[in-house]
Length: 78
Image (cartoon, rainbow, N blue to C red; front, top):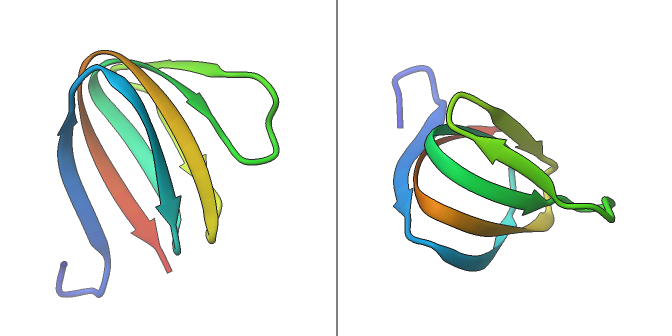
């Protein structure tokens, strides 16, 4: 949590398939690694690699298939 009220998390995800819930809108920045993401209201998986990002709408679920160990920074948008 930062003084201006914003929140971010840094994380490391091992290979596997994971589903996450979100209350707030999120911007997921992939720092290093390789994954596929299935976003709400999408029927196709998107490939995301280090240096790319994707947005997740508030109050939704999304699934990632992590191909290689992945570092990320998640920004929560209120």
